[in-house]
Image (cartoon, rainbow over all chains, first blue to last red; front, top):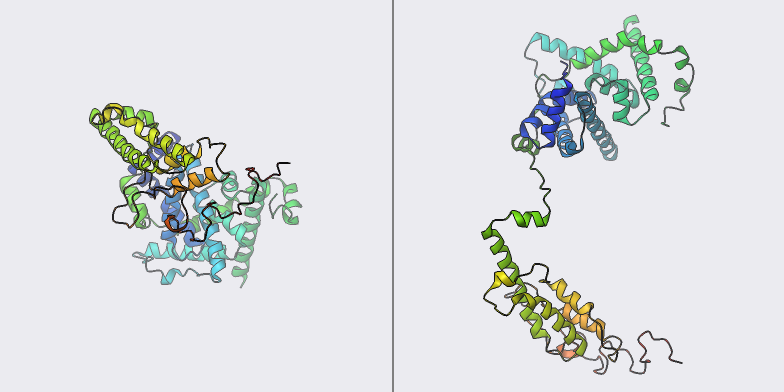
Length: 186
Length: 230
């Protein structure tokens, strides 16, 4: 499920959101919140929905200063999500433990159809692979996967140089490939 | 410069291979992305109460009107009500300051008189016509009352601490303060604004010599800065 909008409609959406329009807020929420929730779930956050709500509260609080179209809006949303994740990581480090996300124990993940169950298994396997990556590589990959951000947009969201993000992605994919090859050979 | 830029894997031969190494990742990237995105929920998550309210009601627009424009936009009734409120508050403060102005300290008296005059000025000659005499620029609060005394010029012949004592006396008074009825505070200060000992409102000890309010020895030089006159 990929969301692409024309720049004109996204600019109009952003303009309405800047004016405090509730319908525009709802539209932005419906457009981007599933991907943001998926991003937090892939990070193993205990309460991904709560964190997603906090991200959008932050987005709407700052939207008056936002300028741009659909690409900029998506980058903006995931930039806020990234910073919220960094805050969450620091908070968990202070608490001294990390809550591992277990999709089986999540009461909200109730597969109602076979296709959904298969998709869930696929996602679970992919998530397990991503968890094997170092944090910086994982962050780049999750922003690329869930935010559908380009290398440049990802660099902007995480505050790194484009070349560094390219390198992190390359190394992440090489590592994933290696893990998969090892799994196949066993 | 990030922490990763120093990594030899980043700075080394990776880029000598050109962009083909990145393009070569495309197939793996697409496959991994599709697998990961399968975990994206089909419907938006449940918004928390604060966000739900925001999504339902939107955010209020901030007014960019300046105060003058806001006043101008008021209707006749609004303007009359606002002016009446200002005049009422100012007149109450002026009366309090006037009662304090009977103090025995000349500087305090002058300052209080000034404060009273400034706050009472908008009463005009006809107290019943509050709307025509009101002036929002006139001071109508405790700070203005204190400021009037603090900015007044002290009498050169007064003692070095007279100005400070006068300001203190007004600051601790109820000049232009809202009514304190029922809160156990006196409505007015003692008639001696610079008084001390038993009748001082701040409860200074009785042992303070009556000749000097701060308790400094009377043998100090009269020079305000304390510098020797010779």
